[in-house]
Every structure is written in C-alpha cells, then in structure tokens.
Length: 224
Image (cartoon, rainbow, N blue to C red; front, side, top):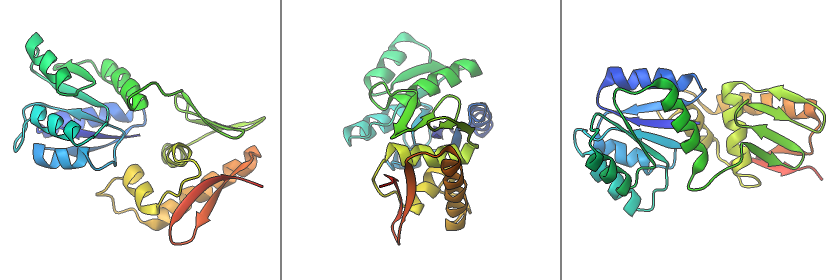
C-alpha cells in the first residue's frame, strides 16, 4: 500500500511516514500543492494524506480540482484547522475523512486502513483468485491447505497482481507502486520478487501462476 503525504512541514511529514510504516504502508512526501495535485492524479497511490495550508496551491483547491478531473483516490485531510466550518468545507470539497492536529497515531492508522481499502466502496479484507487468498490484514497468502507469510514488498507485488487479475501489469507500474517514483530500484528488483512469489505459490500448490508477458510485464492467470 503506497500513501501520498502532502505536507509542507518536513519533520511532521517524516513522523507520519514513520507511523505508516507500523502497518507496512510505504509512502512518499510532497511539500507543495502544485506537485501534490499532479501526484494525486498520477494513479501511483492507494490513498493520500493532505494538509490544507500548502505553498503553491492550498489543499482545498487542490482537492476540488483533482475531484473535478475524476480522481477517486481516498483522501484524508490532516490539518490544524479545527472549526466546524473548516471540517464541512473539507468534506464537501471531496475529502473522505477529516482529522485535526495534534492527532493520535493509532487513530491515523485506523483511518488509513479504512480509506486505503475503500476505493469508493467497501472492499473485502481478502483478495481471492481461484484457490489462492491474500489476507490484507495479516499479509498471509493461502492455498488449499497451507499459508505463508509474505514480506512487505512481496505482499505489495502480489496485491497489485491480484487486484489487476488477468490483466498485464508492467514492471514500470510495479516499480512505481512498490518502490516509489524516486527509488533507484530497477527491473531486476521486480524480477527477484516475482521469483520469490512464484516459489511460494508453488509451495502452496495453488492453481494460479504468474506469467511473464514478453516486453510487457506480468499477468496472474489460472493454470490450464
């Protein structure tokens, strides 16, 4: 799960990043509204945490414009503005939740867990494909008779493949979503984690397999 943090206070943004790591959420920090809007609309994130007072473009304007363009990304507004009218404006502008500073880390994690799984409507805790089940709370991958614990990046790669079942997912997409757009990770990193997942799927004896689509990416398919 990759979260976008749009917050111009570097120390606070890094604190939020540390809190998110407790639930295995990867995150990127952006410190201005113009860049924040572009990233919000990029499709590279599962949810966003948005401050309202930002340089370049304020959070309300940013959110309204992103929603007008069809951006459905779940957004939490995290701000020092605590007046009722501020909350109403934030929610009416397209925010899914409004949390004020100072905030409790556990409440933040609870909100993000809900938002990241919502995507506009309730999504089951489990992702299922054939006889394979990925639990999004425990990060366990299960087959007909066995289960294995996935590492953080293994889980993220498998989640992307299962949510895009039978569609081709490019290496570039996996790199952006799992490692981040500024990471120095390359194709080899993706190949290594695909190999890890294939070995675990073989151990679980599931019907599905990860198929390499030459020069395109990977596709989760049922074995014939």
